[in-house]
Length: 231
Image (cartoon, rainbow, N blue to C red; front, side, top):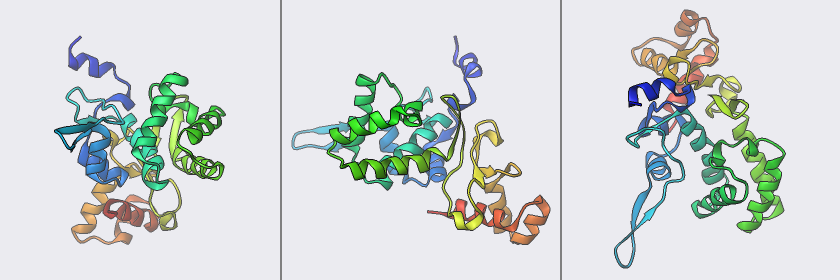
């Protein structure tokens, strides 16, 4: 089967669609960090070099494009790694434990993180990395906050609501859906690309003008601007 036919049979969340820089911008992750998570990197040793193995397997046949599923994996990994301070070594321990002991090939996409089995995993994982019970509970709350921002159908991720300051316009104003606008971030209420909104603002139009034009609240336009301009 050639690559063109294979791509047609892919589900929307499996299609390679995002460059590394683009994905990093959508998820608010440093490009170098996302590159290490997905492509790995070399590092110097006393003799020669070592290699940091990727934590996420990219969907693209050339190994340089992320699928929507990869975006979700990076979103969850961000919760474990950057916001809770779990080391890369410990994340890798968790992934290996899940593969060998729980039979989970893609832990960061697994429904086991969203069901009662999560408790078993977190308790064992906390023991493996010497995480206190309080630490386990804190991590569970953090994972909940991230996983609630993903809309699922059984074990398939359908939509991601990336983080923006909630006081800007409330939760779930911006969404990423592989079946809408080719998977680019949009206003959830009107499927308008956030990038297009910022382009019009940069061209001199006002927030109120765009709100009237699109039939949305000014706060939604502001949320799109904040999301696009966030570091």
